[in-house]
Image 1 (cartoon, helix red, strand yellow):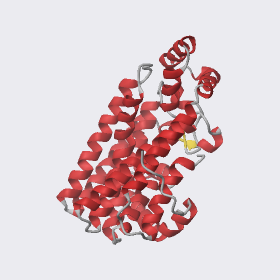
Image 2: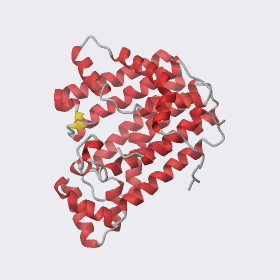
Image 3: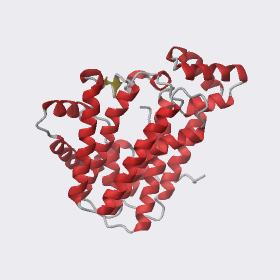
Length: 331
């Protein structure tokens, strides 16, 4: 396991302040390139983009670029591409999961229906490829084409695991690598690439992004069993209702005694969100949240370790801070 870096790191507010100028440029570009003469596209896209969130993925592109000594228009365009791809997957995910709440607001599919959400997701996805082609760099297109293909594989893998009580930790990690970590890794690699970093440094930033993605998603999945619904911004127990066994539940199923294990298996197979109290009791009895937190911290520490060897700077410190934030946040 990587050793924790004990160097003080900035908190999220300080990281956001440091990134503010880049994020203003990225947001302006996102809004400009969202525009369509089809009114419904503008309405749906504006709804999901304006829902807020921390814009973590585009921020990572900018920070990785600055960590490698560069910043500017190309970084902003790459960041917008990453955000469009991410937003497209959110629209599609909410349809697949039949979600009605995201970030505390009604989902696009709850307002405009599934067809509009899928089609606007397709628009955002294809718009990201237009932005990509404008940069006219084959390496950029290769990285993003590979990442988007892996994301699609992750969606299908997750679908195969719905209501499957035999999903183990290895299968779970395979899904979150594709669904979350590969896009983080693509963003941080692209930030380095746009700054003219050599392959070794690009690989360091790729590894940082990949490990951060694992840490972020494990911590995110823990929130479904530990956060307040209002803070979470979605319905508590949604993962269970959708038949998704994430790490806390997977750990509990692996470590509970036989009668509880069989009951948990039945709950997963039924997607029985009404059994949340039973699931929570088993998760607490097995120390499954503590175990999941340890795993998330291991990935966050590995993300920090990937930065070792880079010249220390405010941007590198910010990347370290994001690794720590990923596993310390409560929402």
